Image (cartoon, rainbow, N blue to C red; front, side):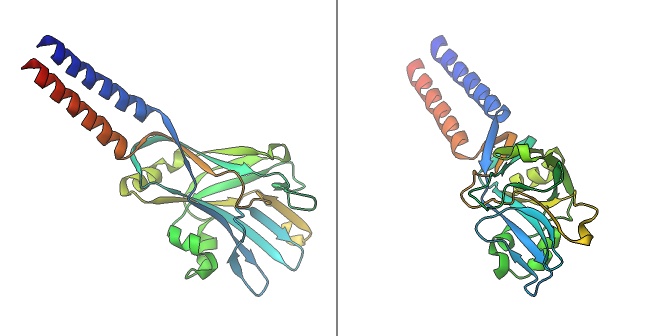
Length: 248
């Protein structure tokens, strides 16, 4: 009878260890949606940038004057636990061809993207121009709770830019608990002081498009649910059943 009990105890210990290990590991989630909303002084006003672009930009040539703010959405419906760390990775593209916009387009030595919470429902972000109020979406992407910022240079093109999202953990964990989507807004915070005089173009993620590497969110302290948990539980119960049969 001692051996089956030891087997069961061993199985319990192994399962607990596996749970602890899974909770401690980092998991990577790819974006479910991303894009950019553009404001312009032309007649069309505000619209969503086409072709999957998630650029952030400030342009002033007199006519037009344009601003772009970007967003990224992640689906948390299959996550459980409490996130203890979070890092956002956004790909800073290289020019896709001659004459096409580079990922970094500025005369300044560096530019900074600041991140914010987003109150707009993710379905409105996805809808873009067809949404109820694209103008309010543009404003929302750069006016929420600050999550942090990161600077980049032309030398960073062709690599991921990492953003520490420690400041967003509260909102991330609320979305995990609710099993909902989580959106992050982005706006340039280093626009040149002479912008209003015209002839200024500052942009990051300028040549981004649908085919670019996925935006990623790295989370620690969370696990996928619920399949892995149920599989472990059912396996443990089967082990207990085997032990009981052998002990008779």
